[in-house]
Image: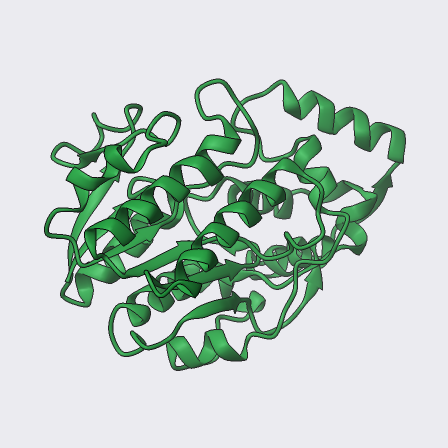
Length: 296
């Protein structure tokens, strides 16, 4: 198949591109204006501005399927979250319906139901638009909702690995209580490849989660053990300082810790991994093997 892959230079997109190519597909990698120098020959696209179907129709000529992996954690002038998560994907989905590209894979996120954050509301809006097109029989989409995705190249993964090297951890309260089911980026990419191959008949929403739930603090402890270190001392950061540190993170572009991240920690990021495991044909990578399987 000829696959248009958005976000092909990003953390998840790079891994998905490799998995699709191994499966024999031809990947047409979308690149933003900021990334064109790193991927000559990619398909230029700007998720901050390409908010009409007309902008996408020429890019869909000869395309059999679309995979959207673009996402941001916070709003910025260069990457407005409403455009990146909702307006532009909706325009892309409409263009797919108009051009007869029925197979669409949307990489969304787990834990967004009920969350009032802009991250969650914009992600849900794109999902709702895609489901509306599916209900009218115009597309055959799949929405993937991964828990925390772990692997080399991910900003949050790098943060967890850096924390795992420290003998003393001072953690915000939510990181001691909120649960996640970390999923290997390689497993997630294999699921995308399956959806364009052996599982082409799969539609709807698929939770993508690892086999065991644990708190962020337990995840860092697991990574620390995998690095060969003993247990670290863990202290709880007072709530006032937690909020202050998140606001400080708001001022530093690219840092995964910010007010939006703190709000997202208000609920668990967990789910039943059985449908995901059926897609990839095996049990997902356990958190105790993430360093060997997804980092090295």
